[in-house]
Amino acid sequence: MWHELETLKRQISLLDYLQRHNWHSRPACRRQEFVGLCPLHQETRASFYVNAAKNVFYCHGCGQGGDLIRFAQLYFELPFRQAIAHLKQELGVAPASESALLAEAARFYEFQLHRCGEAVEYFFRRGVRDPDLLPRLGLGYAPGGCLRQHLTALGHSLELLGEAGLITREGRDALCRRVVFPLRESGQFINLYGRSIGAAPAHRFLPRTKGGLYAWDVVSAFPTVILVEGLFDLAVLWQAGFVNTTAALGTNLTPAQLAQFCERSDRQVLLAFDSDANAAGQQAAQRLAQRLAAAGLTARIVHLPEGHDPNSYFVAGATPADFANCLDHAQPLES
Image 1 (cartoon, one colour):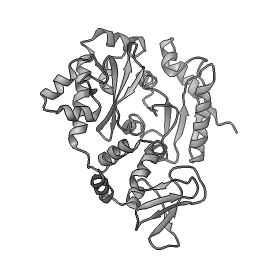
Image 2 (cartoon, rainbow, N blue to C red):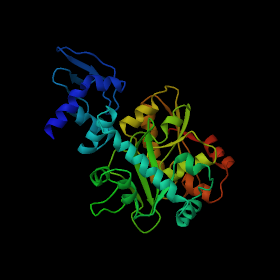
Image 3 (tube, rainbow, N blue to C red):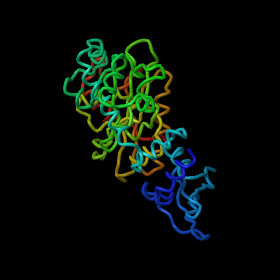
Image 4 (cartoon, one colour):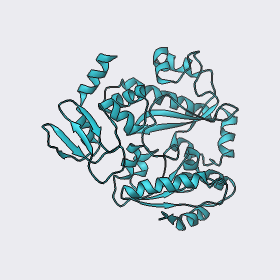
């Protein structure tokens, strides 16, 4: 393991990696030391130092420090092993077969969807009713019991299936009885999300990086972007014509996702989170709007009828015009 980590860190210097992620620096007082704004937290005075000779960083503002792998853990908000996997993939070190394996699994699930009436009916109940949207997003269904046989018949080893998280230690399909959303980044499959249609815990991702903002390859072209919490929120909005919608897969943004929004300085972000009775969704939207504003972006909060998120709002009978009206009345950040 130690040799593997050292090889990974020699693949690219920390300074080059940071510059790849648009970190701007200037030489510091010491030789081979550079300073700039910290990419891990909001600040106005540069306190993030990189020692190019030692290949390490330290921020005097947030107190974080370490090497390339530690930076990836903090920047992408990943555990140690998943940060290594993410770096391998990003730097082209990861076996190409892993992305190909996930692509094969996604295609298998997509094929299974229309053979399983309970899955089609579940999508219908959740408001996803446009038959063209299912293949557009690559949606599928994991019936359980046959993924292992299908993938091993294609030549993939059981060890690789286990490492990818597609099967459990007992050899069962990890996403059994779940509708499946594939997660892609730069055309590569990086993860699969499964939403239970039965009594199992609702949400499950494979134990891998979730990557950046969902469908960012498409959505990044829009100056105004709608941000939602979940993928069913996104699905009904795409179905209604709001294809400038992305999802952070939660109410928080990783530093990498924030950086994606900041690719355009004129970006406006409309946050359409849950309007819970306890106001948790709107409070999360307020906090996130403050982060976006601190990064120099325009953020507005969309208020839906109480008790609704975008998905339930459309299931309850809302029309695209109703949602467009909510967008038109989105509120700026409270001072």
